Image 1 (spheres, one colour):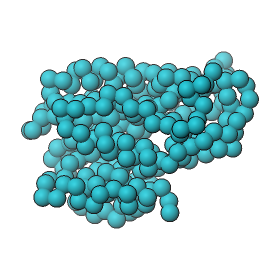
Image 2 (cartoon, helix red, strand yellow; image 1 turned 45 degrees about the vertical axis):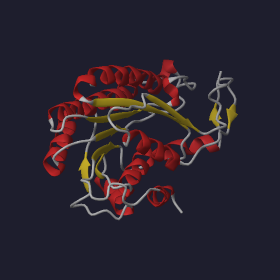
Image 3 (cartoon, helix red, strand yellow; image 1 turned 30 degrees about the horizontal axis):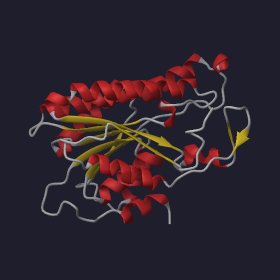
Image 4 (cartoon, helix red, strand yellow; image 1 turned 180 degrees about the horizontal axis):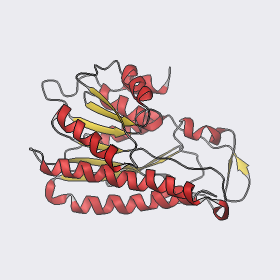
Length: 270
């Protein structure tokens, strides 16, 4: 059984029986963590706008959930690094669903792996910054505006950080810098959102089993210069954690959560 179907099967079917479904935007919803979180929310009764750069993968996510596109899902091709795409995404969400309860700010890229800092092209650096940081800001800004103006006011933003927001891997300067910056974004948004019932938190994830982490199971560069395989965890464990954060009342907030493969070399990295 694949991870996406497992996410749907493990969640309760109708936790909001008799209530209007809550509305979420999940960026990077066409694969990996974004897909798993979208499926977890859909299985729990949410309506979800699926955002990503490839329409076909977004439609695959909706199909995995057996969701009705007219009611519970909305697929919107979005490059989060483009302000006009982000504006279009949140405009369509407002028109289609009428409000927004959750943004899972997930879209991101590691960039070219294993490139020493002195050899990293500026264009590669800029691409990672534009996606991971600028894209997260643009989506958070648009969500903040909508949550502030809607009635009833408020909502929740969950930023996808990383273990790299705490400790870097070798040759990861662009990715690590953006994930540290996301922590500042999370703290500032959390403070600025208080008057408007906008709760903002961050989930820092380590070694969830996705296409992005396949190389960890065969061997990845460690701080001591050696290659070593690292354990991974089921991505659905991440999805369940995001859903827990998302379904708290707005009077409660998980400011920072760290979810990682138990035996990965994080606590002792160095």
